[in-house]
Length: 212
Image (tube, helix red, strand yellow):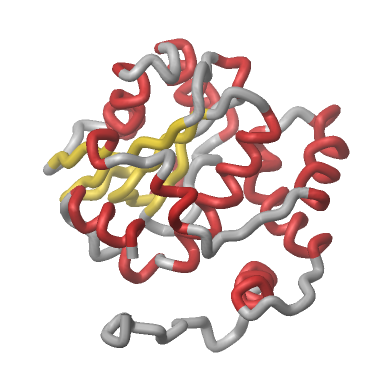
């Protein structure tokens, strides 16, 4: 499409993730160890210490393509996106974000309860940027099928440690490997599209961005 914007927006000082993203985009070599370390540090608070080595090794050997937006659209459908003006607290926000997956039979209520329990004990581990969170727990906590849902808030909700979140994705995966793959894919896609995501106010805005 000759009218499609092909500009790549990057920070003045590149993070390891941004370097990895550009390496993948231009088919150049990538330091997967550094890339794995970045993703591992994001999910480390959610892991048990005995699983650290196994998870890190999976990340190092997994092929990740954050530019593959078609893959993301296979998991996040417009019916799985909820719009809300505001919520009373982050507990309601997490519940609403996960509700489409619950209604579709992809997770159980126990999965949502575990996410809220984890936030209570570990802090806001699901927060990935200043305004966006990825809500998730372990597959054996009640995830039944693979899927992603989302909640868009017009008025941000405060999480612990004063994080004001306006968009929450909820991720469900049937096994640990798929969980890590989806979490990596979604995290990198969010980082690559952060400016545009912060402007989304309707579910159609989000879907258009995924399909771009």
